[in-house]
Amino acid sequence: LYRQFSALPLKKYNVTADELFKVKRYFLVFLQSMSMHFKAPVLKNRDEYMADNVALIADHHGAEARIIVSADNDHVTKSNGRMGYALMSRYGKNYLNIGFTYSKGTYVADGPKGFYPVHEPHLGTYEYFLEQCRYKHFFLDLRKANGIESLNRRSGFRLIGSRPQEVMQFAEMDIRKVFDLLIY
Image (cartoon, rainbow, N blue to C red):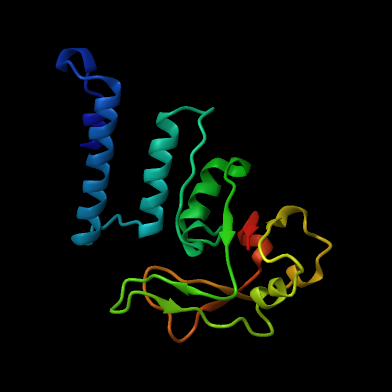
């Protein structure tokens, strides 16, 4: 049905390409929502649907277009099954992701409190190592950070999504395999 709808002749219906694109995009999101709600037999996970939506927008604007997607670290990561993995699989080296982290402060999550405290980084987390740097804020290209030994092994990395993480805020990972860049 989606393919048939996409092939409608624009001139016959007096619709611009941009108007048709918007309708296609809304229709795609509607179909994704229905497939998840009714547990369709061919079901993708939420991250795959997110990647499909990003790809639809990026492809609509052509190969020279650039797009920035803002999502939590878990979604943009290149770990299998995540949105970032699906986008990397589709766009290869043209997909560049950025992880964000910090050591102190609060975050907003979908819960009863307005703000939640972040856990202090502990020995064995990337944030603990990054906190030791002489700069309080920096940008790090992980693709070129081969010489930083602490980044060449699996450690805990802060992963907080939309829900409060009051028990555990760090997940074990190899940061250089799942992110290209890091902002601290």
